[in-house]
Image (cartoon, protein in one colour):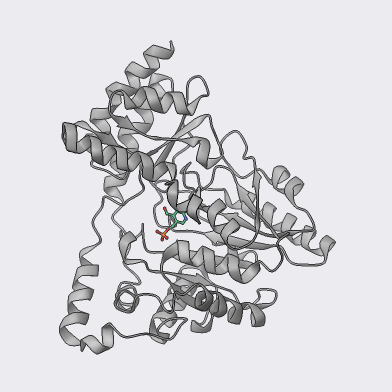
Length: 389
Ligand code: PLP
């Protein structure tokens, strides 16, 4: 725990440097693309819902404890919304409200992991906190290389499965690459999990981490994995979709066909209890219930994506196809992301080296920012490319 606290995450470290640097030279002169903090404000519907709840209810109501799994009407609203969108058949019992995706993941991992040898497969590139979460909940992370387009590679996945494999985390749209895994690949991967599960005599679960589900810029479909593979736990949060990262609100959804459902649901409750979450924020549970059909305004992110992608490719950079989330994953011209990030830093352009994401050749640029910042940073990319040439 000391190690985790004493060494901040590489993302936080660069973000902190950016804030410090902004105080020295002015925020307008620092192009801080380090952190995935939504720049689009929460929709007005969120504010209106909060005001209505606060104006019309007693504080003893909206500040109160809720049942551990969440308020029944919120859980029912989530289930109904998923059924409507994805043709599934969740009920309120299958939904457990959480303090955001980080809580959803930790609770799920704690509920699943029962032996120190239990392995959780993580597809590279990955959200660096996965390693922290898996290890903290007593499991062993196993990392799987992607294909050359930063997509899920089913052969590599298959080769990584052992008798100790408990689950695979799938994050699409992906942080850091912005890639959406094609549905055909997801289905192929699920078939492999099914077969390997049979071979080893126990299910291999999918943990679908999907905080970026609604942030999609192309016609590509984001698979809703429980619809094709019942042994899937969905870990969701409104941190990115409704721009509520500080409010800590999300959920876990478990389909009834999940192998061991009757034990797993109490285990989720047990894990939430043991980890001290008690219940997800009460006011926010009501807000997401009332805003369940509200979709984010992704236009500002789309503008940044457009301004960046073609320009970077025209300069000669290799960039993973940024279909969703709000990240651009850019290959260092010489394959050394630490050096590439340092060169950009000289122009006050701050990106995160891919080392912590499992791909030391790439850097992550978080384009959740005003489009002017993106446009003003482009000349630095041009100058840095010239240095390599
Ligand atoms: N999973 C992924 C892929 C993320 O990018 C993040 C946050 O950036 C999280 C989980 C954690 O989200 P939350 O803030 O809802 O805990």
